[in-house]
Image (cartoon, rainbow, N blue to C red; front, side):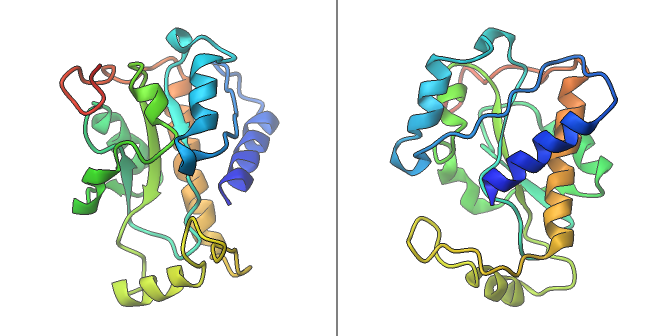
Length: 196
């Protein structure tokens, strides 16, 4: 689903007539679950020098369950872009929240090889407040997709189109925010979990 989302985003920006101040590079990496091998390779052999890269926006799946009122960012510590993310969320009527279980996820995404090199990389995830669903019902719907990182992790063909469109809209808003020449307020924190 994440690769499909990446292709849709690339198609969206390719079809846009609006000129961009920055180049967009769309990269599908491999083997995140085995040490982010693809992302680590790209971080060493980038198409655009990392010093010229404004931000890495990582897609790790897409919300198939139901639209949400909020979203989460990974990592939750060690970067200082929350002000920008709050602005981005407002553009799509969502607000940034945090969840206690985020804290152990700093190195769980393909952004880690970039973060340890001082480049801000984030993954945008749906928040816990699914519109019109209790947490119990949301959990049941998520279970339809099987356990991630197992052979049972299969798409059942029943995604909520509004939820998918909303999640893609969040990424579009993020790209539009950072592509206009603005950059994250700071690089990776020198005292956070990604400090050298």
